[in-house]
Amino acid sequence: MSGPTGEVYRVDRLPGTDVLLGTCHCGAEHTAEDPAAMWEWLLAHPEGHLPRRIDP
Amino acid sequence: MPHMTAFARNQWYVVAHSHEVGRELLGRTVLGEPLVLYRAEDDGRPVVLHDRCVHRRYPLSASGLDGDRIVCGYHGFTYDRTGACVYVPGQRRVPRTARVASYPVAEQDALVWVWIGDPARADPGSIPRAPHLDSPGWVTVGGMESVDADYGLLVDNLLDLSHETYLHGGHIGTPEVAETPITTEVDEGAGVVRVSRHMDDAECPPFYARSTGIGGRITRWQDIEYHAPCLYLLHSRIAPVGVVPGPDGSDPHGFHTEITYAVTPSAEGRVYDFWMVSRDWATDDAEVGEFLRSSNRAVVLQDVDALNLLQRTLGTERTGYQELSINIDTGGLAARRILARLVEEGGKPVEEVR
Image 1 (cartoon, helix red, strand yellow):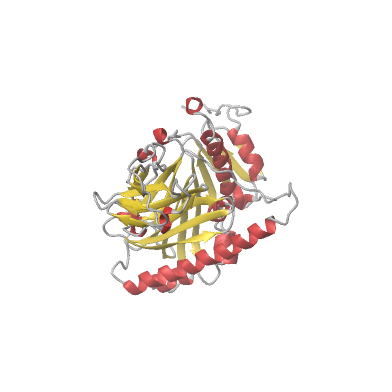
Image 2 (cartoon, rainbow over the protein chains, first blue to last red):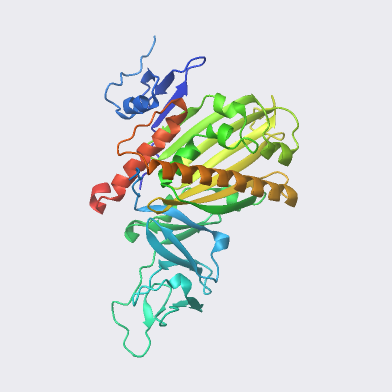
C-alpha cells in the first residue's frame, strides 16, 4: 500500500492570467499553460528541477 | 470500443452503506467479481462471499440464510461464513473443493469496505477515514446510484466541479463555480489529490439557500480530497459574504457540509456511485434533511444521465480520439495518473511492490 510521503506537488493559477504555476516538493517552480504538460514536468522530479535558490 | 480505465486490484472499495447490510442477502459486483453480503447473527459483522454456488453457479444472493449459513436456493448447497461448504444434498461426503471465496471486509464510518486482491495484503488500517459519517453531532443523508459508464468518467466528473455551473444549475451550480480558479495539490505517495476553490463573493445556490436560510450572497469554499481509488470527500463551507473563521479556527457563522462519494468500479463500463451529505447544522430538522437528500439525489441523477450519455457517445468514437484539457482539468489529470499507477501496482506480484 502507498503511504503518506509529505512530498506534495502544487499547481496554482497565476492571478490575472491563464498561466499555471507548478511547485515541486523540492521547491523548484515551473510555469505552463497546459495542465498535462505541467504534470509531466512536476512528476519528472528531480529531472529538470533546479535546486531552490536561496537569496542572501 | 471506448476507452476503459483498468481496475486497480489490491485495494479497498466501498461495497455498501452499513445500513444496507443486514439479514437479507445483498448482491453486488465489484471489479467484475460477484459478491454476496449479509450481517452475521453471531457477532453482527458483515460477511462477503463469492456470489456463485460451486455446484451450478446459482447466485447465492438469490438464496436464503439459515442462521449464519447461506443455503443455495437451487439445490441446497450450504456455506458457512468462511465460504466453506458444510452440506450438500443426497450424500454425507462434502467434496473437499466445495468452497466459495470469502473476502476481507471492514466496516468503518458507516461504510462496508471489501478488499479485492490478495487477501494476505489486506490492511484495514489503510482505509481512508470519513469520520463525519458516524460522529455525534453529525447527520447524514445518502444513497447509491449505478452508472453505466467507465469509473474514470465519474472520477473526472467529481474532480472538476466547474461542471456544476452548467449541469447542475438550479441546484448547486452558480456562475462563480466555473469562473473561480482552483488550486491543486497532489501527494503522489499517499495517492491523494486535493482541489480547492474558494469563492469570496458568490450567488447562493438553492441547495444551500433553502437549507440554511441565507438570503444574500455568500463566501463559498470547496475543498476536495480524493483518496484514490475509491473515497472522495468534499469539504464545503458557506457563510454570508465576508464571514470567515476566526484566528483561532472557530467558525460559529459558517455552515459546514461534508459531501462524500465512493467510486466503486462494478464491472467494465459500470460504476457504483455511493453518495452522502453530512451536516452539523440543523441536525434535528427533518425537513432540511429531506430537502438535502432529494436535492443531492437529483444532482447525482443529472450526473448519471450525463455520464451514461458520454459513455454511449465515446462508444461511437474511433480508437485514439483526442481530448483537450485546460486549467480546470488539473485535478482530474492528476487523479488519472495516480489511478494508472495503482492499476500497475495492483497487477504486480507481491514481492515487486513491497
